[in-house]
Image (cartoon, rainbow, N blue to C red):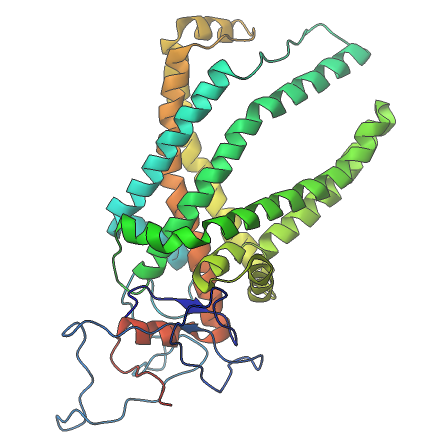
Length: 402
């Protein structure tokens, strides 16, 4: 028996042709089709005790399963609904705090696997970025603080282009690092929901077939965002002058709003692609369907998540940046004199250590929030909590009878 639990979207099968053995209930929850399923897996002998019949016999029928998520057998009236919790989250619709806590709990419970992935990827990425910045990138464009008028605009444009060129390698490497860690950590989180552990080799083995599709999804979303922003900014940039600057500013806000709307709409595509083994376009449609009607809630949770990431980044980066400038004496003196600092190896190494710490902690946290958002939306729309409870071997949840 395949040891890894699988996912399937409502009314569809995994695209790679593998048989998952997922039962298909005939009664949909939302009227759109059969309920999505987690591939049930028999619990190890002795892990869970089957419910006993009244009077001590084992043959009593289980309580009728609930529909719509949130109220398992035996739940009472009044107060918050009771829910089974075999893993890091209760099997019912989740609150914002439970999603964030579930991501942190996964890092705590499976820290060897989670930190093993994120730390390794962060160290390799930061070493490559440091070497590229030190030896391959051109010197940043110089700026004359006394320049005015057209010369000041020209220098600002040169400085912006230089900054984009300098940031491009780090952005590309960060995207690849995020891609790899997201793929592996999504598998870890899907197991942690069931209360099961997974080794690094098992997680990578399960995630490896989905790396190329996930790369394609990431590139597609990146190109989509770049095209929308270019459509908003390029006309003003080509026009130039004061009128061009005004047109650029006028096009920036609409382009930003459309990009933000699409990115939130498709934010669950990566978990759907990983866990349902769907092709790229199907994963985008799945995300749009799951987010529909919950765009503002999804946006709020993502905004809170990235706000926490920014706070953590500042807490770590600011003190280490001050230490790095203090150790690199020439950089500190030039920095205090408001000139363009020529930063040496001490500064790069210390700030690089800070980047590794930040990435090691934030990669699994953001991946956890994305995966748990996906699970929460499927619980709310497709009663996935029933199948998760059956897969985890929770007493009172029998597999559907054929």
